Image 1: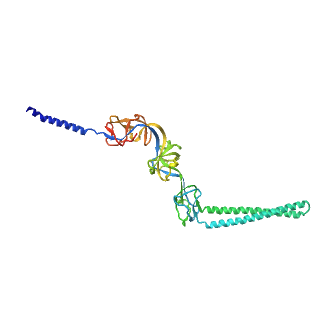
Image 2: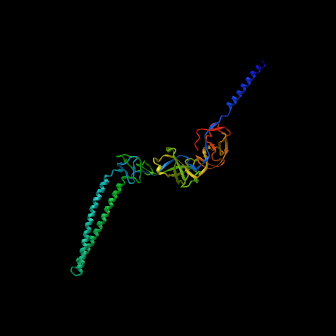
Image 3: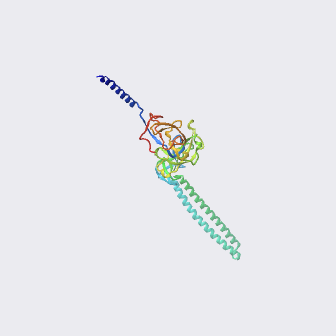
Length: 386
């Protein structure tokens, strides 16, 4: 009977132990899942980027219009057509000039024929004068006849010279009419694509009045040569030099990176925004074979390479916390804060000069809830491959 007195207290003790154990198990700190990246070697570039989106532009683009007014008689091109230099884009009514050209050509033929006649007569007169001059030496003709023949020959030669000069004048008249005709024909100054046509057959066009710009009749774009113009903060501009390498990215072609080279740096600072003054920088594409499908007007961003290291110990820039610190996932699955020294850096990668070693894992998901120094953690499945 005494043994039965201890059964209830033992059961109570067991229940209490189980409860405390359960409480401790439920209240333990659960490991947080973190995305990590191994420290390794690779290319790191020190770059500066544009402050606002840049724009793709064509090396040659012309809004052209006829130099005279008139009625459109012909529009042999349409938007999107590829044309070569000298191709007729538009022609104004010019029947009167065509008739004037025909008249000038006919007059030139008549003048040319008259000149030939005059010069033949001059040649005959010259021969006659020479013959009489020889006869005079032998006293076979009078001095009066010889002098008369000589004067006639010189007169005929002058008539020939005048006819030849008139023939040159008639040829010049033809050139003048041709020039007037050319003013009625709008031709492509270079090979390119017709981006826009303003006008229809039968409409009248007039040149832009002085100081009042009007839309061009034809907008011609040479897309064989493209470049990016983008604003760079005035603080970064002094480090940039013509000829520096650059990386170009486009919103319209996400995921692609194009090689470029700085072609021009504006010699002045833009003051569009007083607190964000910029310098326009132009970058050429170095990949004409990869630029198919690009169009002037696309938005683009540039990263100008100031310096680079091809084999730098590097980590993703997104892993760096304030004060040049990172979180490491240690071998015992704990997060440890580590201060590092850095070198070259850009938006993607940062060079580590001290504080880390190859193979260590730095945390990328630093903004995730529960992530911090001294917290147990495990590597999640979203961590990028090394």
